[in-house]
Length: 112
Picture 1 (cartoon, helix red, strand yellow):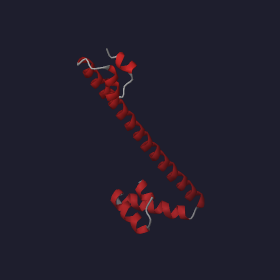
Picture 2: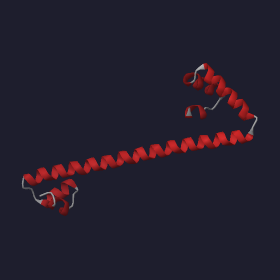
Picture 3: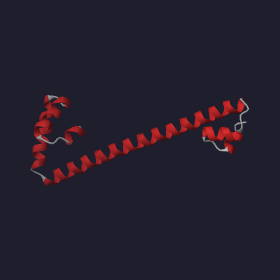
């Protein structure tokens, strides 16, 4: 429904609505739009509601992106730890392990 709210013309709106609404829903929607066009308070409330929906969607996208970043960082850290453990098993120097994995010397020491 958010797509319908961003239509740039009545023709585009009509096309979008026909794809997502059945005939009865479309008629009801058009009736509501006609009523709103006669009532500036309703238009204001509709715009407020539309803005709130868009903000919620933006917050959802932001949260999703932050979650993906966090998950990626955790995965990278886990892989670095796995590599460091393998390098320790090969008796490699801690300084080299630190340089190759990005882990601190203390983090590597704690893996022993």
